[in-house]
Structures are given as C-alpha cells and as structure tokens.
Image (cartoon, rainbow, N blue to C red; front, top):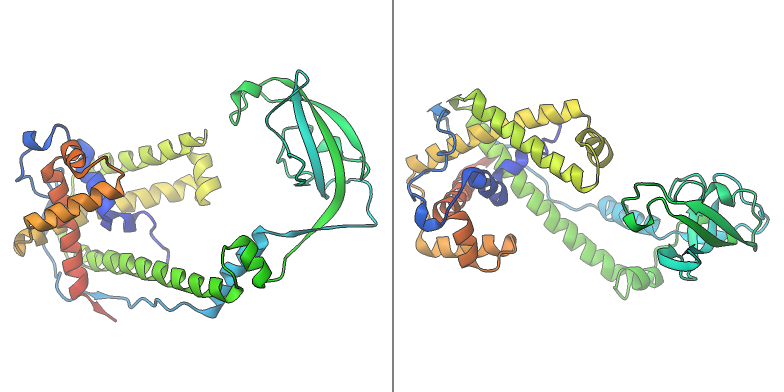
Length: 362
C-alpha cells in the first residue's frame, strides 16, 4: 500500500497547531476563546458525522527483526569503508579512488576549507565532488607525486561566495590509489565509531531505538487510519477555495524548503524526495482534502462528546508545545499564538486519541 507521507502529518500536534495558526494574529487577550477547531474553514461543513467509536484499523506490528538490526549495522559499516592501497596500480585513471592531500591557496595564502589538513582524503575521480578541473587534473598523475593545480572557482559559488570566480592554486599530493573495503563488525569497530565498548552493547541499544521508532510510527499509523475511517464514513461539503488555499500553503512550504538548498521545487522533489512534481501535486491534493475533512470531523466529535481541556491539561500541553517549538517560555508561546489556538490544538489531539483508543485492530 502506498504510504501517504503528507496525509499522516495532519494528525500530529505540530501540524494541527500550524494549521490553526495560519490566520492567527494578535495576542491571547485579543482573540475569542470560542472559535472552534473548524473555525478557519467557515465555507466548509460536515453534513453527516459517521461512526467514530470502534472503527476498524489494520493491526500494526512493532516487532524488530534480526534482519532489520543487521541492515542498520550494514549501513553503518558502509559509511566507514576501509581504504586499502592497490599496490600494483600507480597511475591515476578515471573512476579510480585516490587518497590525496591538498592545500588550496588564494594569492599564495591557504584559504579556509581548502585543505585536507594532512589527514588524507579519498576522492573518486569522475564523481564531481570537487570543482571543475580538479578531478580531471589528477588523471595520469603517478602515486607519490606532488604538483600544482591552477583552477578557477565557479561564479556563483554558493558554499563560499568569497571564492566565487577566484583564481586559486591547489598543491596536491597523490598518496595512493585505493579500493574501499567494508570493515568487519566487531568490538573494535563499535568502540571507534559508535561510542559503545562492544558490538553487542551497540546492537542492544540499536534494537531498543528501532523498537521505539516502530512504536511511534505505529501510533501515527493507527491515528491516521482511525481518522481516515471516520472521514470515509462521514459526508462533507468542502469549499474549493479553502481546499485550494490548503494546497497552495503546502506547496509554498515545500518551495521554501527547496529555497534553503538554492533549488527549484521540481529539482528538490526529485533529488531529496525521489518524487515527480505530478506525484507531489497528487499527494498535496489528497492531503488538503483529508486535512479539511479530518478537521471538520474532529470538531464535530469534540462537540458531540463535549471534549475539552482542563486548566491543568492546558498548562501541561502549553509547556510541551513551547518546549517542542523552542519557545523562550510558555508565556511567550501563548502570547505569540493565543490561548484559543493552543486549546484547539490540544483538543484536536485529545479527540484523535479518543477515537484511536476505541478503534479495533483487525
């Protein structure tokens, strides 16, 4: 079954708060406390609230298998390959992995970030890891030789704008042509790279961590499926304008993510998420519809069951949200978002928990 990565987020406390805060302005004193969870969707409504007690959801296994533990260990080992010199290979060719030392100089002086610091650096020729000309400049060089490599940084050069378009010279030493070999999983490796004294101790901790991750994922999946069942059994009248507003805000959010990497959204989706723009738009459309309907259903259930938050629950929830968002204090967080917004977020979570706890796994 295709995992709906966007829709699941609609059930998190953080997302409920973010959605509620979309049109928020002013302080807690300026806001009404009787707005309702669905107040930001005035042109949409739920016309029939379906079954929400005892809905059926799929059972989710949280068992951690030996194969899953081993897969994590294999990934760790692959991250720290051993460099083994190829003794009978002395001339660099395209595709080789070479261990080099280098010092980059601008106007005769070393520049920050341009040196291997004498620690040796493994570089695959043809990988495009360095600026144009660097890797090609190593081809046909012999092991043990040191040479100057004059190059020009591209313009623009995002990692360090000060170097953009600058002529530099790299002093390069070819230490060896190597092959990467996966190291052995043992106590020595574990102690060096994991902080644990033995491989067994790391495996035990890893299994516990994986167990916690699975339980958290299972909780989210149960919540999503429980609310999905409620939505599927309910009837709604959804405003196209409000749906489009949700789609636009979600797309803009990911455009912002892409901008952090200096990328257009389409390129970001393909590179970071392995997703086409068409698939992304389809997921956003499904997310927007589910988010709107889920919010309307949650609001209706809260009213039907008279679900509210006590003052103690509010204060506890406020502090948790303030901590999660890195706020200076609970008071500052409340002032920024307003009491009604925070209350609605907490009620939202309480309703979802209410429905999920009564769900029946099949």
